[in-house]
Image 1 (spheres, rainbow, N blue to C red):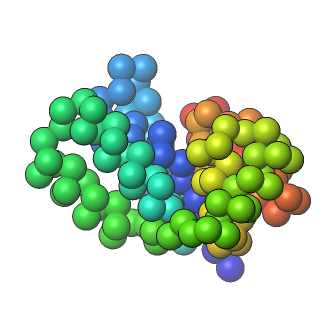
Image 2: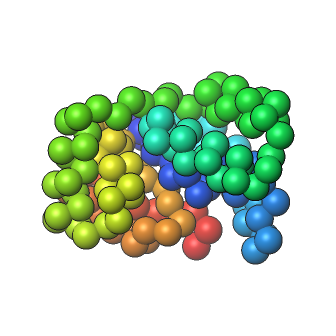
Length: 137
């Protein structure tokens, strides 16, 4: 059985932008390497991705093309009231930032076993069910 994988916004942003710290090629290669798995993001990732690209004046047509590519590569999960409640629980127990806690809650609700992120605690196990991995380490 393939792992259910959740990918944080930062990795997707690096893959679609020219990251000044050289993470773009690594992010692209990483996303290719997981393409055979069941990959998940939440609508929050889409919103954060669009916000960053709009802030950086990426043309609307380019952003739309990227969104279509992302939709074809990931299952996009909704966030609802219960996800917010679960996010509060994650925030209280693990003390991650609010929006990170919301992403973690979404991944947990959908039985993801791996959560890839560059800016959370590498190798941290959440609820004895899901491991956070920094793919750039």
